[in-house]
Amino acid sequence: MIEASQLYKSFAGVPAVRGVSFRVPEGGRLMLLGTSGSGKTTTLRMLNRLIDPDGGQVLFRGKDTRSLRPEILRRQMGYVMQQYGLFPHYTVAENIAIVPKLLHWDKLRIRRRSEDLLQKLGLSWESHAHQYPAQLSGGQQQRVGLARALAADPPVLLMDEPFGALDPVTRARIRQEFTGLDEFKGKTVVMVTHDIRDAFEMGDHIGIMDKGKLIQTGTPEELQQNPANDFVAAFLHGKGDAP
Ligand SMILES: Nc1ncnc2c1ncn2[C@@H]1O[C@H](COP(=O)(O)OP(=O)(O)OP(=O)(O)O)[C@@H](O)[C@H]1O
Image (spheres, rainbow, N blue to C red):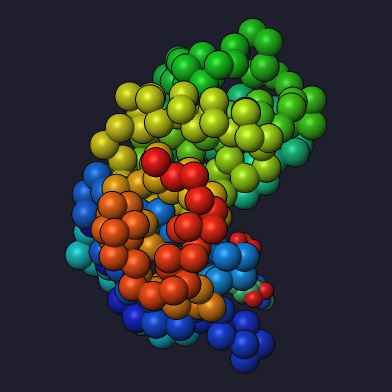
Protein backbone atom coordinates (compact mmCIF):
# COMPACT_ATOMS: atom_id res chain seq x y z
CA MET A 1 0.00 0.00 0.00
CA ILE A 2 2.72 2.46 1.06
CA GLU A 3 6.35 1.74 0.41
CA ALA A 4 9.10 4.15 1.38
CA SER A 5 12.54 3.33 0.13
CA GLN A 6 15.78 4.99 1.09
CA LEU A 7 14.27 8.36 1.97
CA TYR A 8 16.72 11.16 2.63
CA LYS A 9 16.06 14.75 3.64
CA SER A 10 18.33 17.52 4.88
CA PHE A 11 17.47 21.02 6.02
CA ALA A 12 20.16 23.63 5.31
CA GLY A 13 22.70 20.87 4.90
CA VAL A 14 21.79 19.17 8.18
CA PRO A 15 20.45 15.64 7.66
CA ALA A 16 17.02 15.05 9.23
CA VAL A 17 16.16 11.68 7.61
CA ARG A 18 18.90 9.31 6.53
CA GLY A 19 17.95 6.31 4.45
CA VAL A 20 14.55 5.38 5.85
CA SER A 21 12.70 2.44 4.25
CA PHE A 22 9.52 0.62 5.26
CA ARG A 23 6.45 -1.01 3.81
CA VAL A 24 2.92 -0.73 5.18
CA PRO A 25 0.42 -3.18 3.67
CA GLU A 26 -3.25 -2.37 3.19
CA GLY A 27 -4.84 -2.14 6.65
CA GLY A 28 -1.44 -2.12 8.36
CA ARG A 29 -0.65 0.26 11.18
CA LEU A 30 2.91 1.44 11.53
CA MET A 31 3.88 3.57 14.51
CA LEU A 32 7.03 5.66 14.12
CA LEU A 33 8.34 5.97 17.63
CA GLY A 34 11.41 7.88 18.71
CA THR A 35 13.01 10.73 20.52
CA SER A 36 12.42 14.38 19.68
CA GLY A 37 14.16 15.45 16.49
CA SER A 38 14.74 11.91 15.23
CA GLY A 39 13.05 12.65 11.88
CA LYS A 40 9.61 11.15 12.46
CA THR A 41 7.53 14.13 11.31
CA THR A 42 9.78 14.74 8.30
CA THR A 43 9.37 11.09 7.30
CA LEU A 44 5.59 11.27 7.67
CA ARG A 45 5.35 14.46 5.62
CA MET A 46 7.33 12.88 2.80
CA LEU A 47 4.55 10.28 2.42
CA ASN A 48 1.93 12.83 1.32
CA ARG A 49 4.40 15.19 -0.35
CA LEU A 50 4.12 17.96 2.17
CA ILE A 51 7.89 17.57 1.97
CA ASP A 52 9.67 16.24 -1.10
CA PRO A 53 12.60 13.96 -0.31
CA ASP A 54 16.14 14.76 -1.47
CA GLY A 55 16.60 11.08 -2.24
CA GLY A 56 14.60 7.88 -2.33
CA GLN A 57 11.00 7.34 -3.30
CA VAL A 58 7.54 6.64 -1.94
CA LEU A 59 5.22 4.25 -3.71
CA PHE A 60 1.48 4.49 -3.03
CA ARG A 61 -0.42 1.50 -4.38
CA GLY A 62 2.62 0.77 -6.51
CA LYS A 63 2.82 4.26 -8.04
CA ASP A 64 5.67 6.65 -7.44
CA THR A 65 4.08 9.55 -5.55
CA ARG A 66 6.05 12.01 -7.68
CA SER A 67 3.81 10.98 -10.56
CA LEU A 68 0.66 11.82 -8.54
CA ARG A 69 -0.63 15.35 -8.05
CA PRO A 70 -0.12 16.28 -4.37
CA GLU A 71 -3.78 17.25 -3.89
CA ILE A 72 -4.97 13.95 -5.35
CA LEU A 73 -2.58 12.11 -3.06
CA ARG A 74 -3.70 14.05 0.01
CA ARG A 75 -7.35 13.23 -0.61
CA GLN A 76 -6.37 9.59 -0.23
CA MET A 77 -4.44 10.28 2.95
CA GLY A 78 -6.25 11.90 5.87
CA TYR A 79 -3.79 13.89 7.94
CA VAL A 80 -4.04 14.53 11.67
CA MET A 81 -1.59 17.20 12.69
CA GLN A 82 0.32 17.94 15.85
CA GLN A 83 -1.40 20.55 18.02
CA TYR A 84 -4.76 19.91 16.34
CA GLY A 85 -3.94 21.92 13.19
CA LEU A 86 -7.45 23.33 12.74
CA PHE A 87 -7.98 26.46 10.68
CA PRO A 88 -8.73 29.11 13.33
CA HIS A 89 -11.03 31.21 11.14
CA TYR A 90 -13.13 28.24 10.08
CA THR A 91 -15.90 26.90 12.27
CA VAL A 92 -15.88 23.27 13.36
CA ALA A 93 -18.29 22.41 10.55
CA GLU A 94 -16.15 24.25 7.99
CA ASN A 95 -12.99 22.53 9.18
CA ILE A 96 -14.57 19.10 8.82
CA ALA A 97 -16.02 19.94 5.41
CA ILE A 98 -12.73 20.88 3.74
CA VAL A 99 -12.01 17.64 1.89
CA PRO A 100 -15.66 16.67 1.23
CA LYS A 101 -16.09 20.10 -0.42
CA LEU A 102 -13.01 19.53 -2.56
CA LEU A 103 -14.64 16.28 -3.61
CA HIS A 104 -17.85 18.17 -4.49
CA TRP A 105 -20.08 16.36 -2.03
CA ASP A 106 -23.47 18.00 -1.78
CA LYS A 107 -24.39 19.99 1.34
CA LEU A 108 -26.73 17.42 2.80
CA ARG A 109 -24.19 14.63 2.50
CA ILE A 110 -21.50 16.78 4.14
CA ARG A 111 -23.88 17.75 6.93
CA ARG A 112 -24.92 14.14 7.61
CA ARG A 113 -21.36 12.88 7.60
CA SER A 114 -20.11 15.69 9.87
CA GLU A 115 -22.98 15.28 12.30
CA ASP A 116 -22.41 11.55 12.48
CA LEU A 117 -18.64 11.86 13.04
CA LEU A 118 -19.01 14.60 15.65
CA GLN A 119 -21.49 12.51 17.55
CA LYS A 120 -19.25 9.43 17.38
CA LEU A 121 -16.36 11.48 18.67
CA GLY A 122 -18.35 12.78 21.61
CA LEU A 123 -19.35 16.21 20.30
CA SER A 124 -22.70 17.43 19.06
CA TRP A 125 -23.64 19.29 15.93
CA GLU A 126 -25.98 21.59 17.83
CA SER A 127 -23.41 22.65 20.43
CA HIS A 128 -20.19 22.62 18.45
CA ALA A 129 -20.64 22.86 14.68
CA HIS A 130 -20.70 26.64 14.60
CA GLN A 131 -17.99 27.24 17.16
CA TYR A 132 -14.46 28.29 16.28
CA PRO A 133 -11.46 26.22 17.41
CA ALA A 134 -10.45 28.80 20.03
CA GLN A 135 -13.81 28.28 21.75
CA LEU A 136 -13.08 24.58 22.27
CA SER A 137 -10.94 22.76 24.81
CA GLY A 138 -7.80 20.97 23.62
CA GLY A 139 -9.54 17.60 23.77
CA GLN A 140 -12.47 18.92 21.76
CA GLN A 141 -10.15 20.43 19.15
CA GLN A 142 -8.37 17.12 18.85
CA ARG A 143 -11.68 15.34 18.31
CA VAL A 144 -12.50 17.80 15.53
CA GLY A 145 -9.07 17.16 13.97
CA LEU A 146 -9.79 13.44 14.00
CA ALA A 147 -13.28 13.97 12.52
CA ARG A 148 -11.77 16.12 9.79
CA ALA A 149 -9.22 13.47 8.86
CA LEU A 150 -11.93 10.80 8.65
CA ALA A 151 -14.54 12.93 6.89
CA ALA A 152 -14.05 11.75 3.33
CA ASP A 153 -13.22 8.21 4.42
CA PRO A 154 -9.66 8.13 3.02
CA PRO A 155 -8.01 4.71 2.84
CA VAL A 156 -4.91 6.04 4.61
CA LEU A 157 -4.49 8.05 7.80
CA LEU A 158 -1.26 9.86 8.55
CA MET A 159 -1.23 10.93 12.16
CA ASP A 160 1.38 13.16 13.78
CA GLU A 161 1.28 13.01 17.56
CA PRO A 162 -2.51 13.04 17.40
CA PHE A 163 -2.90 12.91 21.16
CA GLY A 164 0.32 14.69 22.06
CA ALA A 165 -1.14 17.91 23.37
CA LEU A 166 -3.57 16.22 25.75
CA ASP A 167 -3.34 15.38 29.41
CA PRO A 168 -2.83 11.66 30.09
CA VAL A 169 -6.43 10.95 31.10
CA THR A 170 -8.00 12.71 28.11
CA ARG A 171 -5.35 11.18 25.88
CA ALA A 172 -6.18 7.63 26.92
CA ARG A 173 -9.91 8.24 26.59
CA ILE A 174 -9.76 9.79 23.12
CA ARG A 175 -7.33 7.14 21.91
CA GLN A 176 -9.67 4.40 23.08
CA GLU A 177 -12.76 5.99 21.59
CA PHE A 178 -11.01 6.68 18.32
CA THR A 179 -9.53 3.24 17.84
CA GLY A 180 -12.94 1.73 18.61
CA LEU A 181 -14.64 3.60 15.76
CA ASP A 182 -15.81 1.62 12.77
CA GLU A 183 -14.51 4.47 10.64
CA PHE A 184 -10.97 3.80 11.91
CA LYS A 185 -11.05 0.06 11.36
CA GLY A 186 -9.42 -1.16 8.18
CA LYS A 187 -7.52 2.07 7.57
CA THR A 188 -3.88 1.95 6.65
CA VAL A 189 -2.17 4.07 9.29
CA VAL A 190 1.23 5.63 9.70
CA MET A 191 1.46 7.46 12.98
CA VAL A 192 4.21 9.45 14.65
CA THR A 193 4.43 9.36 18.40
CA HIS A 194 6.92 9.52 21.20
CA ASP A 195 4.48 7.75 23.48
CA ILE A 196 5.02 4.05 23.81
CA ARG A 197 1.46 3.46 24.97
CA ASP A 198 0.06 5.04 21.81
CA ALA A 199 2.40 2.84 19.80
CA PHE A 200 1.57 -0.40 21.56
CA GLU A 201 -2.16 0.19 21.62
CA MET A 202 -2.56 1.39 18.06
CA GLY A 203 0.19 -0.27 16.05
CA ASP A 204 0.62 -3.68 14.54
CA HIS A 205 4.20 -2.68 13.71
CA ILE A 206 6.49 -0.20 15.40
CA GLY A 207 9.47 1.52 13.82
CA ILE A 208 12.00 2.97 16.22
CA MET A 209 13.76 6.09 14.94
CA ASP A 210 16.93 7.72 16.16
CA LYS A 211 19.02 10.48 14.56
CA GLY A 212 17.23 10.28 11.22
CA LYS A 213 17.43 6.52 10.90
CA LEU A 214 14.89 3.79 11.29
CA ILE A 215 16.75 1.55 13.68
CA GLN A 216 14.33 -1.37 13.87
CA THR A 217 10.85 -2.28 12.70
CA GLY A 218 8.80 -5.13 14.06
CA THR A 219 5.70 -6.12 15.93
CA PRO A 220 5.56 -4.85 19.52
CA GLU A 221 6.38 -8.37 20.70
CA GLU A 222 9.36 -8.71 18.36
CA LEU A 223 10.80 -5.43 19.54
CA GLN A 224 10.37 -6.29 23.17
CA GLN A 225 11.79 -9.78 22.80
CA ASN A 226 14.60 -9.01 20.36
CA PRO A 227 15.61 -5.37 20.48
CA ALA A 228 18.18 -4.74 17.75
CA ASN A 229 20.48 -2.73 20.01
CA ASP A 230 20.79 -1.00 23.35
CA PHE A 231 19.03 2.11 22.11
CA VAL A 232 15.88 0.17 21.20
CA ALA A 233 15.99 -1.77 24.47
CA ALA A 234 16.52 1.39 26.51
CA PHE A 235 13.83 3.23 24.61
CA LEU A 236 11.25 0.53 25.18
CA HIS A 237 12.37 -0.10 28.71
CA GLY A 238 12.90 3.52 29.68
CA LYS A 239 9.35 4.51 28.80
CA GLY A 240 8.56 1.35 30.44
CA ASP A 241 4.99 0.45 31.19
CA ALA A 242 3.87 -0.95 27.88
CA PRO A 243 1.79 -4.11 28.09
N1 LIG B 1 11.36 22.88 8.05
C1 LIG B 1 12.50 22.63 8.69
N2 LIG B 1 13.56 23.45 8.58
C2 LIG B 1 14.72 23.20 9.20
N3 LIG B 1 14.93 22.12 9.99
C3 LIG B 1 13.92 21.28 10.14
C4 LIG B 1 12.65 21.47 9.51
N4 LIG B 1 11.83 20.44 9.85
C5 LIG B 1 12.55 19.64 10.67
N5 LIG B 1 13.81 20.13 10.84
C6 LIG B 1 14.87 19.51 11.63
O1 LIG B 1 14.96 18.15 11.24
C7 LIG B 1 15.17 17.30 12.36
C8 LIG B 1 14.06 16.25 12.44
O2 LIG B 1 12.83 16.92 12.74
P1 LIG B 1 11.44 16.14 12.84
O3 LIG B 1 10.40 17.17 13.14
O4 LIG B 1 11.27 15.31 11.65
O5 LIG B 1 11.69 15.22 14.10
P2 LIG B 1 10.63 14.47 15.03
O6 LIG B 1 11.23 13.15 15.31
O7 LIG B 1 9.29 14.50 14.40
O8 LIG B 1 10.67 15.37 16.33
P3 LIG B 1 9.49 15.80 17.32
O9 LIG B 1 9.05 14.55 18.01
O10 LIG B 1 10.19 16.76 18.25
O11 LIG B 1 8.43 16.45 16.48
C9 LIG B 1 15.24 18.21 13.58
O12 LIG B 1 16.59 18.46 13.86
C10 LIG B 1 14.55 19.46 13.11
O13 LIG B 1 15.06 20.59 13.78
